[in-house]
Length: 392
Image 1 (cartoon, one colour):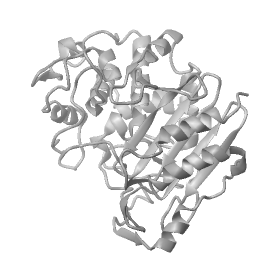
Image 2: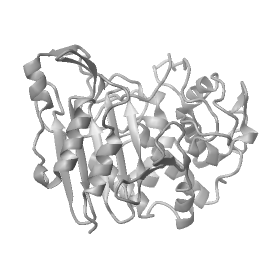
Image 3: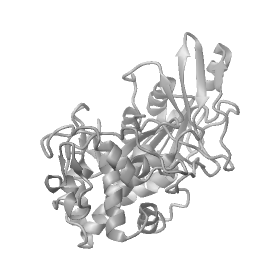
């Protein structure tokens, strides 16, 4: 089994939903994809962003939403539906799996440990995890902590056939071991290549240095201090989401018909762990991402290190990667900082903020296999929302 971050598991009173395929007739599809008026601000106030959001939703899933604003106010736009069985707009407080946005939380904890003098960014990972990154072309003495957080380590992207524990969960060490059975992408420091295994290694590093389970460390250091009451790191075997939550779907289109499979609870989250397992909401992710932009989670020197970026090979020129942090050049000038996230439960999201207090979070509840690449990406929605928000 190849592990890849393209969806996430959900939780509904602790009981999994059926994953039956839902076939929608053309009339139902039209109802499902119609735009739901915004609640926090009239859609006419952000007509350009609404149009981009509608285009994104049409090729992504049953529904999509954006939560955006500045330091004094926020606004919300919706398209489609949060649930294919009960039509409703996606709410900014709906909980969903944030996928790879988890990587930023992981990176923040590592950088806090650097601030505390417990980790050195340019030290080899072998110093902290002896013998873990070795064999099959890997040498932990030549791969630094910085390279792991920046995806310049060359470590393979995903785990190859990890062995579950007797209870069906996956330990971080097993995910790393299974990842390292794949050959390196490149020699350390010579290129850039996205890797979920990098952040599984970072999770092991946190546990080794703090003596805590990594979820407990993230909770104690970030979630509780910021008051993120709708954000959580799951324990093994826990696939639930707290209501209100956003169901996730996977599906496709045959002519005028859409079909969707509810995949909300379909994944054992320990497969993704510190690379993509967390749950949150648009509102909580906005709080976290703006706090990060405002320098509230680490020293100014460490924030500067986090924002030291390299080109993301294979991505447009306006995308660069720091230490668990994504730099997005805006069409209206300047940059926004954040991360995108996808998981196999059908959730796709992204949250970005600017230093002047603007923020934008987008989420959709499906992976629709219609066109690739998509004509409108979530990053176009984020760009439109940020550029359409005045600085206040």
